[in-house]
Image 1 (tube, rainbow, N blue to C red):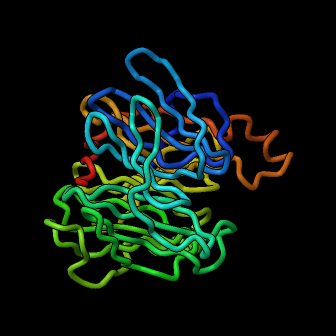
Image 2 (cartoon, helix red, strand yellow):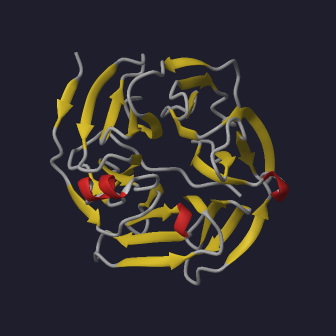
Length: 294
């Protein structure tokens, strides 16, 4: 039987994001980042000083990864961009899909090999409009297509297993990978069946191989064992939880973004912390994200 843990954490940011997503952490600068996708915002929080900064974006950004001390990779509705960390300026890196497709980026993560998995979806979440791509040193390879809302992209510590979901069905898939490249070495299979209330959203895989999956609509992060067993649910104070990320010098804490996208006025009133960003308040066997190899 899985365990249920009440929320024991705190609010990291009171800024209400319409669609808070893409949390990540840069250990070199002790800085947390996340996006408000629909409002074209990048949020930055220095964990040492507590200084919060909001960066207006010229596009809908959804994912950020460290390249080196000076540069960051950002996924957006205009493809992959390189951001100068000090100036905030962007330069185009790669196109994922032609602009006429009308898609934007969504969930993504860097594989231990330094390659990237990044998902796309329709601007109105049209059925089957999106795909998941592998990007390595400028080469883009489409891995999976016909996906409506790509999420839960994460990898086992050894890089030999990848995970993803289409939130519309919420079945979490796993696929064997070549650890040296992050490319599939076999067919995808079911890791967690869909059908439970809410939607499987963003996820991370900890140092023990357990999956931490945000459950949209359920005010929770679910933890799954490497064999797919549901072992714990960690409650949060806002219903539309979107994605967790490890942070802290040892990567042993977890912060979680949320949203109010699609909420009615009554739902907003009943969920006053919708869109806030939370520290889950637990110690976890986390790990730090690798840099993207350009």
